[in-house]
Amino acid sequence: MDNPFKKILHNEELPKVLKEKVLNDVAMIKLSIDVADLFVVKYPNTIVDLLSGGGTPPSKDNEDNTEEITD
Image (tube, rainbow, N blue to C red; front, top):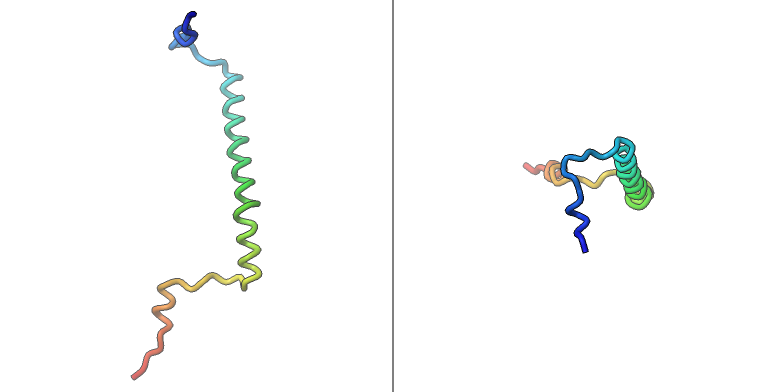
């Protein structure tokens, strides 16, 4: 049985149509991942933030500056 990988030519270029199809498929996969991330992760986080008051939690810098100063 012959090894089919030895028949591959190293200097052969792929047709432009095939290259475009592969790049379009990769772009579609990336778009699908972005849409899934939007609706599965970011949208629920936005709803939780809105229902809990909408503000950002105080950062460590803000906590240090809000201490009372006594004389």
